Length: 207
Image 1 (tube, rainbow, N blue to C red):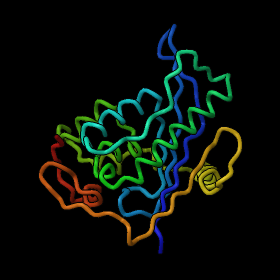
Image 2: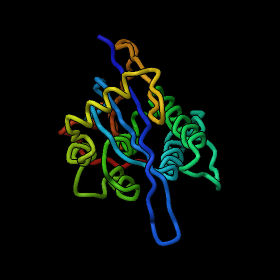
Image 3: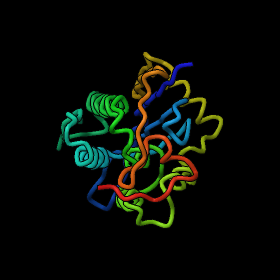
C-alpha cells in the first residue's frame, strides 16, 4: 500500500469582475488516498492572486522553510496566448506539488481549505482562526467542490493519471510511501496534520 497525491491544474477560464476588468482562474483537481486529506477526490477553482495569498500564508506559518516560487506575474498575460497559459499552469502545479511534499506545510488548515473548499480567501482565514460557526472539516465536507458528476470524475481521473497529458491539462502523479508519511502532535495553536480534518476536530486558532 502506497499513498499518493495526484494534482492537476487545468481548464483556464476567463471571468469579468466588472466592465473593465477580467481575470483567469484555474481548476485544481486532487485525487489521493492519503489520510491527510478529508476528500479523496476534489476540485476547486482558484486564480493566480489566490496562489499569491496562499504562499504568503504558508510563509507566515513556516518561517524556516524555503518555499517554492510561483510563476512570475505578467501584466500582459492573455488567455489567448496558449504558451503563457500553459507555462503559468505548469508553474502553479509545480508550486503545489512541492508544497504537498513538505510535511510541515500540510499541517496548515488554510492549505486544505484552499484546495478542497469553496470558501473565499477571507472566509478561509476566519475559519482557520476559529472565527466561523463551522469547523475546517465541516467547511470541506459541505463544499460542493468534491461532488463530481460521473462525467467530470472520469475526465479528472483521465487527466490526473496520465503523466503525459497534452493540451492545457497538466498532471503530476506524486507517490508517497506509507512509512515516510509525517505525523504531527496536536496542539492548541495548530491543527494536527490528519486529525484536523476529522469530524471530531475542534476549532483552533493559528498564530
